[in-house]
Amino acid sequence: MSRDNLILNRGTKSVVAEAYRVLRTNIMFSSIDKKITSIAVTSSGPGEGKSITVSNFAIALAQAGSRVLIVDADLRKPRIHKIFNISNSVGLTNIIVQNLDWKTRVQTTEVKNLGIITSGPIPPNPSEICGSEKMKSLINAFKEEFDYVIIDTPPAGVVTDGALVGAYTDGIILVVASGDVEIEAAKRAKGLLDNVKANILGVVLNKIPANDNGYYKYYYYTYYHEDNSSKKEKKRKKKVTV
Picture 1 (cartoon, rainbow, N blue to C red):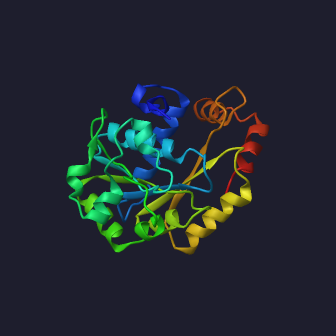
Picture 2: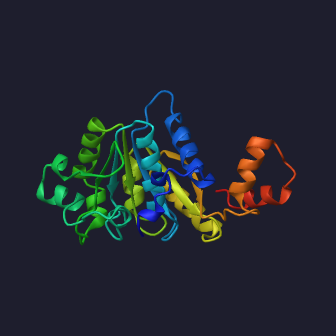
């Protein structure tokens, strides 16, 4: 992984970049009575692009003028430090275990308004850390200083960490890779989040081919031109609904 995956940081006007901006708008207006500040992001399994989604979504929010903090709470296979090419020698696990001042551990990025707390060293007990009272208190402290706290968590369909974090954040987003994940696996992940009463904000459909037959081309063409002739593409969209 590298900064090449940071679509929005390149100032691109591609349909993929616009999709992240649509996600930003949808989240910003997703709640009328309660502001959504802390948002966990998970997936049903590995390799579905949740860390890339976290990174680009956070950049989209920061570009809109919001103060944003990315927290890498995937304490099993952290990726955020690799995407942004920053150090992971000290991070979330150090803050919690060693009671460090978290404000001194926020790493700045070339993106204005965006800070990052990496995972830190991989611990032997990631689930216990994610479900701890210290973790909950820390997220609340982040919310006092930032407009949005975007938390990368492990796949909810594989380990419990994502569901544990989703239970005490304001909302959670489920990332599903089109064509890579079985529909039943995605439904199972959603069911696990429902079991802990997580506030599921929505599903991000990822890894859709951006070609003439892909969903992005279909979606944006119909949105701007109101051409509804492609029934085949409608079926593809329904196929991956969870």
